[in-house]
Amino acid sequence: MFCFVSVSELVLEEVGEIQKNLQIQTSCRETAEALATKLSRQNRSLKRRSLMLQSHLSPDLIQHIDLLEPDQDQDQELDQDQEQDQTQTRTGSSRASRSRVFRPSQVPLVSTLYLQSHRDRIESELKDVREELSRTREQLLKEKHDNTVLISEKVRLNKLLNNYNRVSLLAVEELEELQSDLDLEKNLRSEAETFAREMLIEQKKLKRQSQILVQSLGPDRKEEREERERRMKRERRKKRERRKKREKKERGERREREERERGKNREKKRETEKREREREREERARNVSDSLEELQKKLQSLTNPKPVPPPPPPPPPPPPPAPALNPLSSLLALMKKKKDVSADIPLTEHDSAEKTDVRQAAVDEMMQRIKRGVQLRPVDQSASRTRRQLEKKASASAIGELRGIMENFNRSPKTLVQTESRDQDSELSRVLLRRRDALETRPGLNPGLIQD
Image 1 (tube, rainbow, N blue to C red):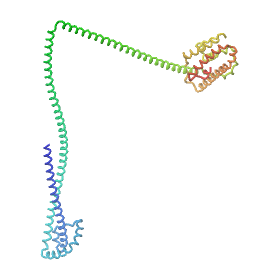
Image 2 (image 1 turned 120 degrees about the vertical axis):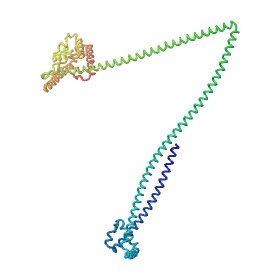
Image 3 (image 1 turned 180 degrees about the vertical axis):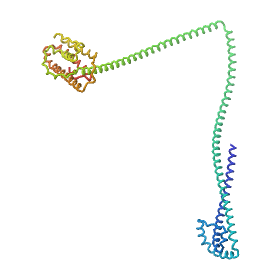
Image 4 (image 1 turned 30 degrees about the vertical axis):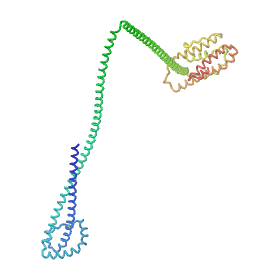
């Protein structure tokens, strides 16, 4: 720190000296400039006089004299000074002419040479002064830069020193606290040692007194003491047994709680598994219903005949009551003719006494067939557009036939009411309603089948 202070003081002294030198140089420069201006004025006046005296000199003498040409900037000053020096030039010219008459070849030459040499000397001095000034300026800038660097380094070192001082103060405070704690611990330890020594001495005294008392006591006192010790041991044993029983009871209760929690968890798992199974069943049922709908659509598309069918015949007259009671058998017979799958759907016509059994069997067979599915034939994808149109017409004709059958079936209940009993009608209506409800719940079915 003291080194930095001394260095900074030296730097400040050097800067002061440099500033003094700079002031001296500036004053010298100002005096030199004033002298130069004065000499320039004198030079101008001498030039004017020499020009005025050229008319009185011979041409040979003029060639030997090296006269300087007037500057352009100096012409204006010459014009301004002419008015002021007119009187002086007139008198001077008369005097110079008189003197030139006597010495025409020496005065102008000597004056001009002297002035030229004096001016050159002054210019060289001025140039040296300017160079010295530039050098001093550069040195001053360098010293200023060094001074700023030193000041910044000084500030940094001051900050570092302040940090060190702060840390040292904290360390000293902590050391003082530790020293006080150490002194306190030493005092407490000494007091504890003295107290322990006193207690040890008292304990030895009490042991000695107890031994003396035991020796002085008789055998009765010894028996009482032994009895007390036995009683204490029994009580301790009982307490241990009670504690063990209590622990066993708590363990049993914990096990029961754990078993209950496990049972609850198992029930929850079973419920979740049941729900998952129900969801899976519902999804499977939905998938099965979707597949059944797709199969039914394919079945409807395949049941349409490929060749162009003849125009639909007029609706037949109402059938007799006995065969009209089995509309499903007629529908299945029509499907059998168009599909040529008589082996897959065996139908048996029974007597009029077994009409209800035939209906039930037909319904069961139809549902089983829908559940099992139908073996589809390969479709020729390279068919032309006309063939597709023919298939559409055939499907329309088949739908028309089915509608005609259903219309006949809808007309026949009047005769059925007359021939059949109320029990059979109720059973048939139940079956048809069940089937209609089942078909209505399935989207994408043919409206003709829903009416059936």
